[in-house]
Image (cartoon, rainbow, N blue to C red):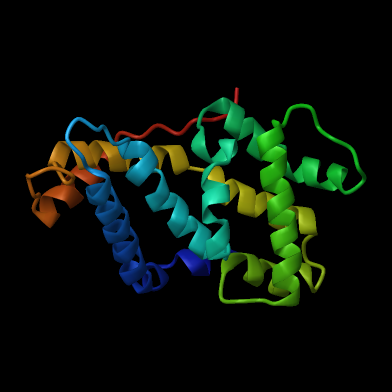
Length: 205
């Protein structure tokens, strides 16, 4: 259902937006640079880059980017997040009946509430994004439920996000991207692939 939006052609088409996002965040960090002042690499760069890109794929309005980036489920990793993702489908079905699932944190419930409202919005005004595609092609014709769309969006938001944040931070530091040293693009690609080969998938306990 979602594979076409992650095809090589689609990702290549997003390269200008990805480059613009990276350049904008780096420029903002440079503007904040002052003698004796520390800048949080993860907060200012490594976290927003993958987050903003997946938001665009999902179809999140630009004005909501800061709200979503602050959500606990997106910022954390480990089995707690995996358990929350696994129970997302169940929770959405229950919350529509005004029942809360204790296992989910308050911030995760806020995130799921937001995604449910976004599904409704994209049903009314679809665009060229993943949630619109699921809402129009799958939900509207009865192939899946609204809770399924919310659960898929939730999983895409949290799955691998912490891994990508850590990788971006490590490569940035190793290559000196944010300092005076400039890395050859091929060297950066080699180090990214090296990090990818060492990533272990975290499953819920």
